[in-house]
Image (tube, rainbow, N blue to C red; front, side):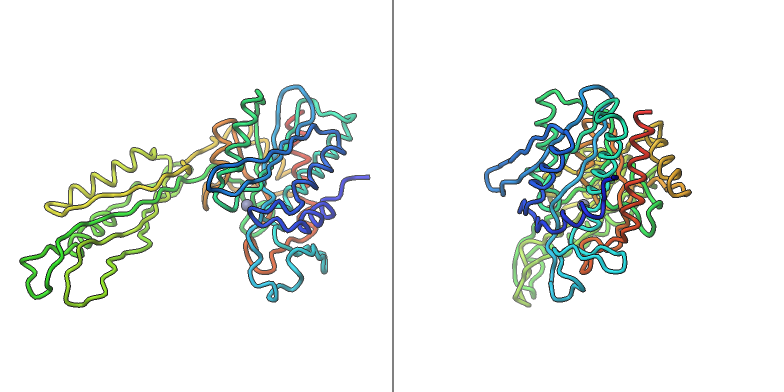
Length: 384
Ligand SMILES: [Zn+2]
């Protein structure tokens, strides 16, 4: 009998694994993967000042090529539980729709990957031609310190070599064949600080108002686009998210003004080149303004998995099952693919993302069946 992705997704939803809680989700995966003949490693990663997080690595087969399904079992909190049509961790199915936190982001996709793999392995005498692995973290929705990044380091130290990876994040805007993500923009946060000299508002000649300098520099940084976009990316964007002086007194010129900003950047820039560009633009406009930029640490670099045979394989598999050819996109926020790309080519394809992180997160059971068929087709084509 074929593995049932709906039953697996229900079981996973019933594990209340809100980051950083394991919630039984990793234990569940361990049980079913061991039962299917995988070698399973359950790994607790730690870091001073952060929650300890459970992760899982499971592999079947010893040969190349080595295909990896990646994902996360942790979920965001359910929010106001009374607003849900069904309890968020009940895994209720109503009129062929499965409700629950994680239904689309991304326990549903993990269930599909498991069901597809179990079917594929069973159909090939209990072992794939190459190797299939699951790289599963419990730390994606949080700070992502004790998650995929450490799991990959652990695997590399064991000499695990990955050839290709599909990450099952919910990539589709409306229907299951809309979109494969072949890269992600980088993300960089900074604070623009302008220093002045405080003083009496009636004697501005005796003071130096940092608000004036801030206005000048905001204008300079917003005036020109950062680039015009590239073949696979939209133009980069700088967005100021907060401007703060913190002055409670109306007749005092403040001593400092601060503006926080985020940049989503494409492959026209490296992180360092982008920092230089921003600082050059500020310097060119500054004159006598005293300013500096405080950059936050970032681990979200831009990346692209260039279109080629692997992208074609996944796209064809989607088309084989759905009759539609998905768009290739680099839109949206960042994901753990930003870590995986340092080890092997990675694509993202999962469920429809309309209800992710919302009240009544849900997935039609038909989508789970279809995504399982797509993943199954990917495995078949991959191992040819
Ligand atoms: Zn996710």
